[in-house]
Image (cartoon, rainbow, N blue to C red):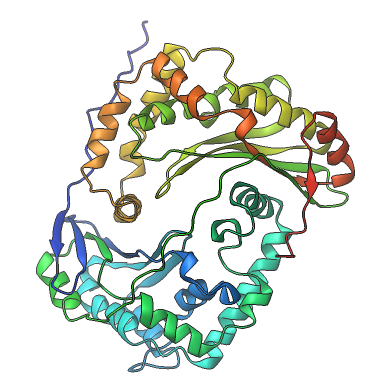
Length: 441
């Protein structure tokens, strides 16, 4: 009996939203999804963390996390109770280049939820005790980051990539020293200056019509200030940072490099190459370090887009005593001594195109994808062009793009583990490691 032939699924298209521009400056991407029981909504604010005063870093995160504790109209947690009664949860993240804030609710309740959501945006109370609570939570979060090998390693890599003098190289949520200086007055001023409709984008997906959206958001007229000029991004130089965790039997390794992002014509080729080299379970580097050598349960990575630039990363957790050899082999893999084959690139293409419908099934998936596009200044029609480009990349183009933009000599390295074992192994390989104390900024 012959095996059935497996072919690619019917070509999939990211849903096209209705795009509205309200008089208050708010852009709206409305994804009408009849029958979708859960609606998702999210605002993208073009607010970079470099807007924070240096001595109050973490302010953006505190303001975001405390915003729904109470409003002028419904103080002392009452607004949260009303949202919960409507089956609604709110969420948000203060990222380095932008901030998101939104939530989810039953689609049938959305018309009751959106007035509460806009109330949170217009008139948060920011009571002293609520702000103090979230400052304390952020301080505890910083300690948790340092205690987690993976989180500490990611923080160290950013420090290596950008340097501690650049905002992108310091903790997004601030440090205990900067957080301790934040008070309710600072938080209110930050919200007033940055949470407004002008230059913001609302992404909303669910069984809701556009008239309801306009009705609730058109009256929102908070005026915001212009953002500070973007920091000059420092030139990347090779750094090898070790975060000491005495007695650790495992080391967490991440190698990273700043690269181009979505607007580069080679982006499709880079995504395919990254998946073939390190993104898939059967990628070259995972097969080498997991399957052949048994150093790790898994190596992963690839290219991630950003606003003005992207990043290539590769890493995983390995036994402490083989970390030096693992780093050396990862760097060798980044050199891509052997051309990618058509089979490798085709496997990557089939995965990236084939997984797209599964990664965009729900209203939350749609909004998350749209949010990243809006933050980058792209429109929804970017995705069809990108998938078309993925289908046209040859193995030679993927190989050339990877070699041109990724190189072991340009990569920074962060390793978390027992420094007494790691330092001599890394030094023996000529990598000039330095131990860093992430509690000191």
